[in-house]
Amino acid sequence: MAKEKTGKSKKKGKPKVHEELRGFEVSIDSFGELKSNLPIEKLNKFLDENVDDKKLAERDDYQEPKKPKKKK
Image 1: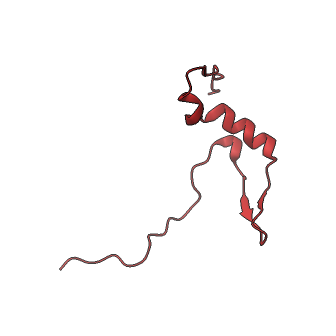
Image 2: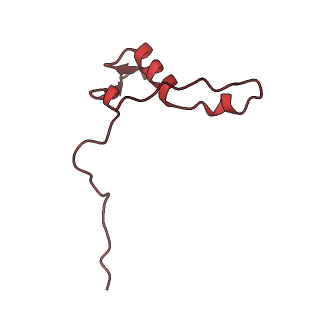
């Protein structure tokens, strides 16, 4: 007979994170508000530089901005 897995697999350690977001933590308080240790402006800047906006890509008048070269 094959063994059945019970419960969820638990991953140990921390997930891989972009170096600019190391130490970033977010939580939801009792009022449903997001609390973060990173200013929203810095988070938005990171997302603008590193994530493609799928909604804008579908538009005909949208031109993708040039991405800065990544540092090695």
